[in-house]
Length: 208
Image 1 (cartoon, rainbow, N blue to C red):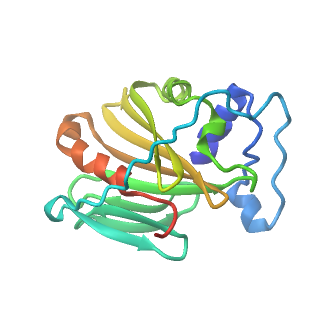
Image 2: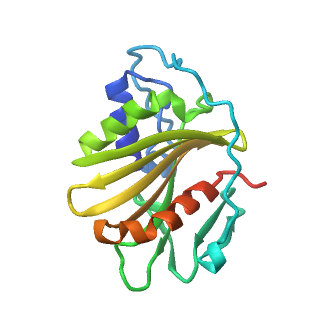
């Protein structure tokens, strides 16, 4: 899913900098196929320079710190939720509510070219959000960007027409594009929104 989203954005925006590797190519040891050059990959918009601190509040125990030392990231994940490791092509790690599986948080990643160092190569954040919404039969509620610990994050809020709601965050670091999505039903969105926003704000794809 992450690879599909990014390739669709690259095609629409005539961006060539990612040169993504599929999971099959990675496992086979094959080199990534080059995406044909159609235009420039240099962003023409201003970059975010102000630092936003990483979220550290545990919301009175609703969140717990989780560090993946092998893959090099840290997050505050929902306390007491089931944790699942690695479904190939779907996610790297998932947390899922014990009662309602629609309530879940997933982290996934895909390799990119070593010369790709920022998510802004995809395009301007609002344009990226609108493109994603159109492909997913969703309404883009908001699109924003922030810089935390030197990493640029794109954050999107989607109301999806199947009755679900999603926060999606994209970033690039250590030669990978990182996706973090938090999902629930539209009915439960208002209840979970504060928790999910703190989850997204706590994630950093590096150890500090």
